[in-house]
Image 1 (cartoon, protein in one colour):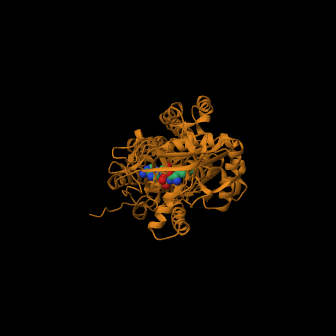
Image 2 (spheres, rainbow, N blue to C red; image 1 turned 90 degrees about the horizontal axis):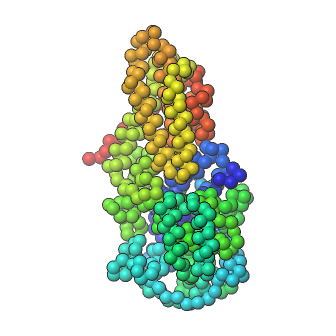
Image 3 (spheres, rainbow, N blue to C red; image 1 turned 180 degrees about the horizontal axis):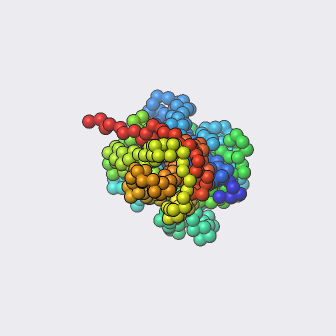
Length: 506
Ligand code: MSP
């Protein structure tokens, strides 16, 4: 974070087919990070959008019987809608067909050209249109198949403009030496570093056989390679998004899937070095959402549609499930059974029930007003504040799954407190009145902390929980989670179950 600013981005999504849970995953994880940083009173700019040029889009448009522009308009609208549906708090939605983006890409390419980093040459290689990338023969799967999609690659040969990527090897290695957290997690840092060490080939950055793209300013017969056009979105967006957001540069965090590591961790910094632009601070690489052991992908067709899950369980449970089930940075499997199990065992029973019991008991035994802290449970007070610190540390390391796990340790601790202290028994004993005060106060303080900390993951349900506890519900600051924050004397209000039981269809 720099000067109280925090700029984070998702990849921009290809508009070749409708969004699926894999895209929702990246946007939701990014949104959770954005919301957490806003809770820390940082000035956040959160960017997402769509990647609309190139052969892949032109081909899918042709297959749909539409012009590339019509196709891009229709599908970009679906991705914009997805961001809204998953409650993403993005500050801007960029489209690479925006005229300001196009003009700024051309401007930066001209700078790179003027700096002598772009030259004309010819190239032949195996190309995967789904990846929009060339692959060396050794990287292909048997039968000339793309290593990512398992679909056939094409031999492509043409005269192009080339970016002198090879000339940036030493500067990139120096960058990696200086900044061991440039790429997270460390395994991906090592992977990217190895790519650089092994040597880099110059990169073809234009295409002559397609027209759906940004024209090369000094050679309009060619269009800019879609990946170069796309990567610059992180920069161009700040040049024209409303609110003069230039001050947010450089990005504090790029969030992306492991399929596009090389583009972000090797090519992108070299492009910026050539253009003379300050580099992003960090990027974090997450794994795949798998279905049946395979990466969910539009190209292979094994996708899960997020909308039926949102219809049945609500959005927040989906956000929670993705955070907990798929360890951030690793692959994880999305399954309807796993979703239902976590919903009922964790959300309905451990969190939702605990809230209801707590509010009901404060209603029954203390007339709906949180009793005073009797100073009899310093251990739990320390555990609550410790959880806040651990969640901050987890987010500093960009690990939302670890953050959720830490919060859940506290949820379970609070459930144990109820079982062990049995407030309904204390209520029958006048001599135990202060003990009962303590248990009820500790539960309310614990649930407040849990709900503030979980709010970036489940903004709507945690907002309802905080409202039931008489707390600020919309975008609660992190400071509100501290045990010492005023709470005694607050009126609580019963609320409908946060996570009602859902009957699974037979
Ligand atoms: N357009 C490029 C990115 C350009 S960024 C300058 C692209 N688009 S994509 O739509 O194919 O994928 C974008 C991102 O979507 C991936 O990096 C990843 O974050 C996310 N995912 C797509 N499928 C996914 C899964 N099955 N699982 C997890 N994330 C997935 O690449």
